[in-house]
Length: 168
Image 1 (cartoon, helix red, strand yellow):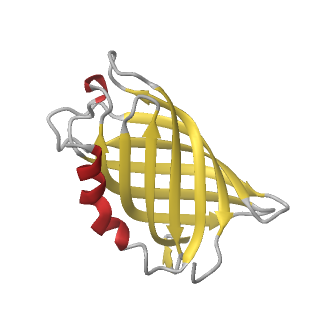
Image 2 (cartoon, helix red, strand yellow):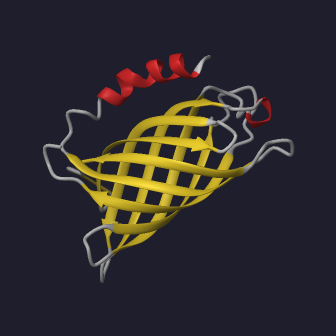
């Protein structure tokens, strides 16, 4: 699948997040490790759009969100799903998300076994004096064994959260 067709296939899913009042944008960079001896592990960048968290889910404020991750070897993951945060004391917080999406490997060695993959993320962060926030997160991309193979991809990232004004 070409990258253009890949992006067009996900466009209807990303449009689900558009009507939401924006909560924050999160930019990140990190290191990804493919669970495949021939895979090309390395750096990646990410961008998340986190919509308003209007639901309470197990003590977390939850809402919809979307993510894109681009790895140094050209791998791309685009996902839409549930994201949540829980405020702790003294400006600290926990973040979590589960976003199904589409994965296209940049090299055949980075094949995760399926185009449909699921990204789970857990992180801890702190609010800065300027109102922005920073977090350190672990994430995992896997096809939950629905593909012909399921090597998975683990990542560690530093994330910078920028609150967006409602109605953005």
